[in-house]
Length: 324
Image 1 (spheres, rainbow, N blue to C red):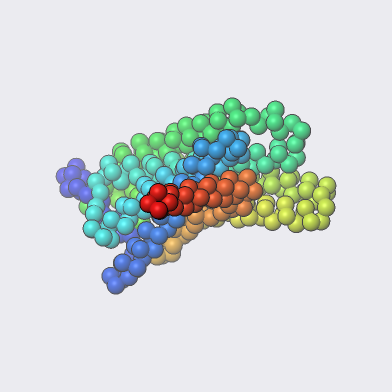
Image 2 (spheres, one colour):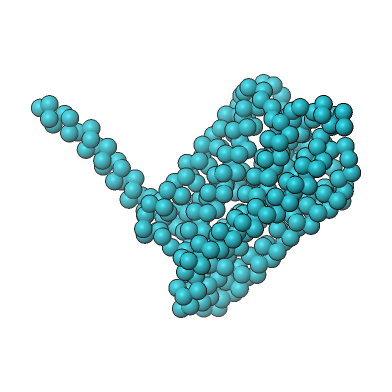
C-alpha cells in the first residue's frame, strides 16, 4: 500500500526513441494533424447540422463518425503536445479518464462503421425498401445505441483498471493512456483484467469487421452482376476505398491486442507507430473517403464557400462605395 500511494503522477513518454532536437518538428506535425482533423471533421459536422439537404440517414451516420474522431483527437493530441512543450504530466485518475475515452470513442467508431455498411447494403441491394427501412428515426436510435453500448464496454475496463493502481514505475511508454499501458504499471496480478479486456477487444473488432466484410462482399457481387462496366468500376473504387478505411481501423488493433495476449513484446517505437497509424490516419482520411468524394456534401460545401466569399467581397466593397 505504501508503494501504491507513492505514485502521484503518470508520465507519458510519448515517442520513446525521439531525440530532443526533433521535439519541435514532431509536435508541429502533431499540431498540424490536429488542426486538419478539427477542420475536416468540424466542417462535416457543421454541414450536416446546418444544411437540410444533408438531413439524410447516411449523412447523420457520417456526422456521428466525424464527431467521435474529433473527440478522440481532442482527448489525446493536445495532451501529447503539452507533454513536449511544457513537460506536463497527469494523475492516475486523469490517465484512467483518458483511457476510458480512448476506448469508448474507438469502440464507437467500430459500431458506426457497421451502421455505414448496413446503410450501403440496403441502399444498393434493396433500393426500393431503403426509404422504409433506413429512416431518420431508425438511424438516430441506432447511433444512440452505438454510443451507449460503446460506453458500457469502456466503463468495464475503467472499473477493472481502477482496482489495480500503479506502484513504483509511473512512466507510460507510449503517446496516450490505453488499457495495455495502464495494466503494465500495476503491481498486483492483472491476468483477469488482461483476459477480460482481450475478449471485449476481439468481440469489438471481429464481430463488426465480419459484418462489414460480408455486407461489402454482397454489395460488390450484386453490382458486378447488374451494372455496366463503367458503373462497376466506379462502385468497386468506392467500396475499395471504404474497405481501406475499415482495414486501417481494424487490422493494427487486432495485431496489438493479439501480440499483448500471447506475450509478444513489440518494440516501443514500432508500437507507437502502429498506435498512430490506426488512431490518427483514419481520422484525417475518413472525411475525404466518406465526405469530400460525396456529391451532395461536395456541392453543399462548395456552395457554402462561394456564398461566404461573395459575402466577404460585398462587405469589403460597400464601404468604398459609400465613401465615394
